[in-house]
Image (cartoon, rainbow, N blue to C red; front, side, top):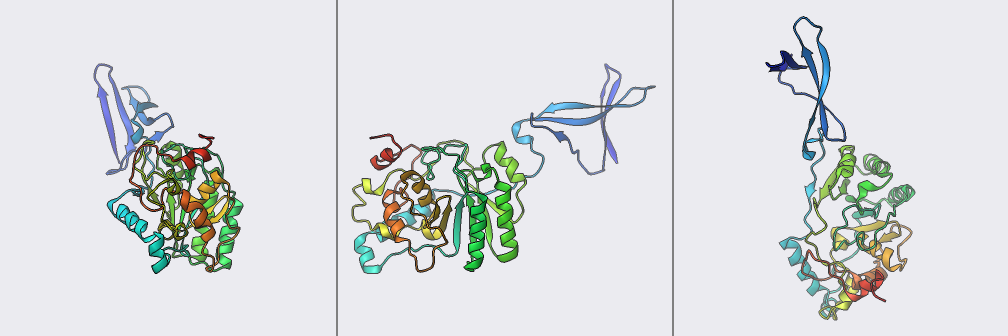
Length: 333
């Protein structure tokens, strides 16, 4: 055991921190004010030793002494993604699909679950409309239980499940949902890659991440403001001239890269479509996990003409919104 001390010659008092193991370190107590209380011993010759605490304010980033998982950084815009988008635009033209067929189909191996549309960051160009049409909507835990039950019954060999939002950690029963999915992974699908997608922004988010089981990995764009480089989601392809020959029944690579969407409104070819259905109210979500024979072409025909992720659009940090979306949000008659 070793101790650390500091003398104040002008007071005749010696402050000595309580002993810690040699080669070890202090384990200070913290509170949410950002202060750290260090247990100290005050020794004055001829008097019994007393103990007290000294509060030392720390900067915000130093307040959390418990480890928080550092997420893998997911970038929405990369050179590779832009090239793929350009190729996707050409491949989904009607004169190309008429010859070579549709390039994309709904995934049977990947799924994204939008458990809430709550979000505290309010990013511009949000593809779940959390900024444009804020909502506190949450997916009931019973829906997660049903999804797990149906996955077992249909023997779905999910390779990856992403827990998304909104900001998923803001769900009032976030820990219960994670526990259900971790148990499903442990009992029925050990090879499953269970992923949480989070903004990684704010103390409430970090507090939830501290409790996250090791079975769940994290991805995040690590956003720090509302202005992020993103494709203009609210520019509907049907409002543009260069998409006049597009075959919207093709869908896009999100169907395969991200996977099936599970939302409070049902099952969709992608979770983005479920978020769009919240705004347009087509109510086209399936009540059950779609069979392999269901190509969800009715959904692609309805949502892809409205989605800024279809085809190719140049990324921006500014808000861009075409007429169809302005009317949908009630900004135009």
